[in-house]
Amino acid sequence: MAMVRSEALLAEIRDEFPAFRLRNKRESHLQRAIGVALAVLTLGGQRMYITRYHTVIFGTLWVADAWAHMGDDARYVLLRHERIHLRQRRRLGDVRLGLLYLFVFFPVFFAWGRAKIEWEAYVETLRATAELYGVDAAQRLRPELIRRFTGPDYGWMWPFPSRINAWFDAAMHAIREDKQNRS
Ligand SMILES: [Zn+2]
Image (cartoon, rainbow, N blue to C red; front, side):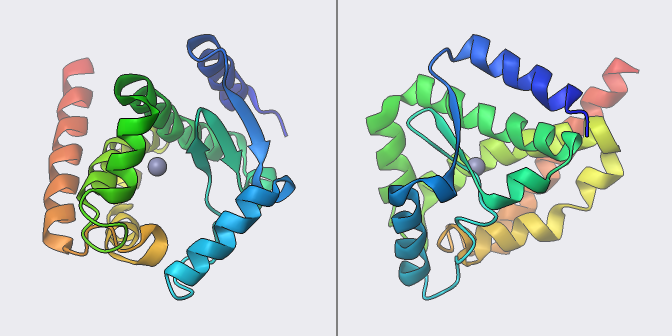
């Protein structure tokens, strides 16, 4: 399978972040330990850290088992999301980003800092999806994003669907406007 689009974006990311690395979670004892800890912390709600969830930590993208089976476009959309996290790290620094992500306001439930950081990256997921598959495809991600933000995947980071729905509407509105302005 040719990986034209995702390889080009990876090259861009390496230009922007020379220390960037991409590694497999499965090959790291620490990542596997984090996976176990998250499963325990979320009472089994997040058991896919190693198999399905890709994570940027200290400038390294740790990919899950799913990466090996992802096509070019899926990798491209994922990398657009993760590039936002790399830029957040540059903007905030490891300490501020780590504190926001883990402790504002609380590690699980009501994790406003994490929700804001993840939302910024998911807006990019929506943009990349709209570019590759059309605005309607991005629109269809609503239930999945509501589930991720209000459920156990990220520790119930903001369990209020109305807030996530409002963010989603605002993001899709901006994406539609950009598209109109370009055409
Ligand atoms: Zn993210």
